[in-house]
Length: 421
Image (cartoon, rainbow, N blue to C red; front, side):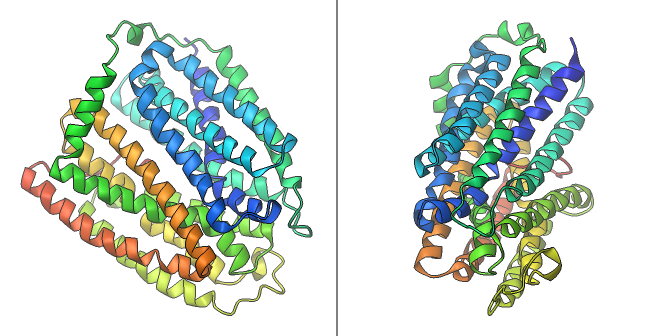
């Protein structure tokens, strides 16, 4: 079996969806300009993406073996190719909603299939972990590339221009290349198809039983609050740069890439530090530093006019400082995920993964909608000051979670698993 072709295909699949999933902040800014959509209305795009991820992930987790990993990935790529081609042909807010629904459904199929396929093409745990980390790194490359790709098509002289929609022809082309590569690449799924398919009803009952366990319940709330904060910032940073810092649209999108880069750096550094320091104390330090950065950066945004801003060289200092919050919030989500999974028996990892996906999606949707409404009701600075509330809640919730975990006698030292959500 041509493993290098399969690996290349999986990387390309992840690259496509990294750009599409993380373009929501850019698109939120653009639909406000193009379709006269209020910030509160634009915030529902996050829901179209996240809720379909949650729903489809739960459904396909039980049936993916019957469908087949390759077929599921081909269906996902075909779906986003059609959605991308529709965007420039029918420029409207409803097609944007359809795009993110298609992206969410497609990513659910891709994520479950990719993770399962890795087990088929790796020979041991070290090789599995190595490729998984490389895959996550490639995902971040896609996130960074997306910001610059979209900004290249934005017309700063005419905010109402729909020229930026032409970027979807390129994305459709990349997705088509991924589709064709996967189509001609053989994947031997015979070993998993021989296994007895899981019972969807049994999986649901087990997931509900697990969710009402006290330590898991506290974890779920913690994960929900974290993603609420993260997505509130990530999805609205381009709009913050445009409306509060008064940067040109293209530069607003480009400079949002600082958040993606700092998040990637934060997860890499945490992977090193977690070998030397308790995960609990690292997260406490990170949360305090995050709050400090909010209190430092947002006052710098006051009074910024943006009159002479033409590029990175003369952008206001706040545009550089605030996105560095990614460096500090990055370790939180993967660390708590590793903590809960490591304290559960292997048979419960599947249901726990389902809970993580569902409540992360709900948290992301809630965070984006709340931030959008605060943008409308007050202003962008106030909306980002609100991030101090979930930061404060996380200080309490992570402390409670850590103490409950210690009482179970199953606390472990976390040194790996620093992938994103």
